[in-house]
Length: 98
Image (tube, rainbow, N blue to C red; front, side, top):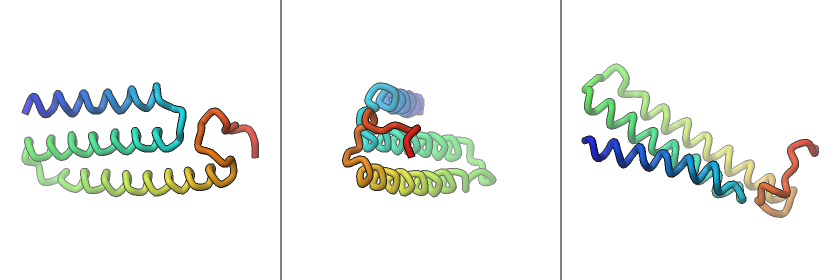
């Protein structure tokens, strides 16, 4: 159990490092965010299964649903920006432009 928690924490930290250092493409940012959400889901499911609480058993399912909504809106933004800018490089995007 302790090794699983350690591996999940390391996975979360690697996702954060990927999110902070590899911000060249919007697609890589979205993949790092999805990885972070899946690790949080696994941690929450592991916590609920180890404590045997039935009142909070719906929380991982809600988190997974919100993660799917985040992924779909992120992909919609990726398609919209690649159509308007022609690329998904973050350096070419200026947030002050309309």
